[in-house]
Image (tube, rainbow, N blue to C red; front, side, top):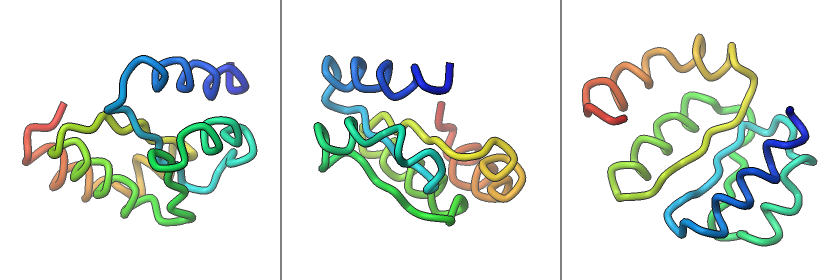
Length: 93
């Protein structure tokens, strides 16, 4: 399943220009093709999951559809405050 994710994301990005990918430096090698094909819509933010969530929220407010990828505990536990403030309070979906 993990190895299928980049292929699925690439297919989605082929049909929707508003989709972008934000990763937290994890599994970067899996997304090489996505990064090559869509260099202006692929962002590796490194080990900064809090910023990853805040950027995803801002991109969403501007009409983009961000796909966020990192280790699950990092995206939830480290980013809870950003999820609450940037997504919850803004009524983002």
